[in-house]
Length: 78
Image (cartoon, rainbow, N blue to C red; front, side, top):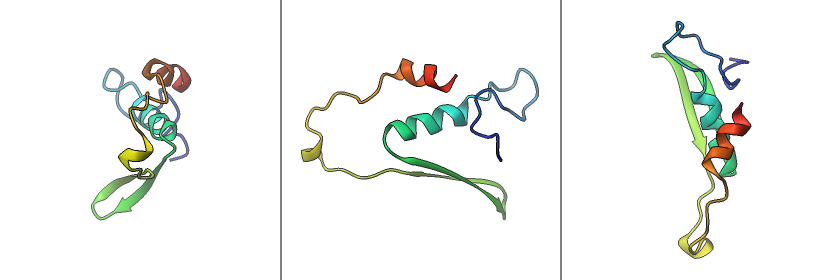
């Protein structure tokens, strides 16, 4: 669990994953001023992922430009 957000960390066999999924997901959520929470669950066995984001009304974001560049997200994950 301590390494799940590290870029290129994977438990999958070679050639079946890049290990970027959770690292990129976490960065995208953080860029939206949110929080990504991962916890172990036993029944059924696996993980539970929760994304916490603050809600805003349309009046608070009139025609706003994106606060991030998608290519920048990938660069900061490396």
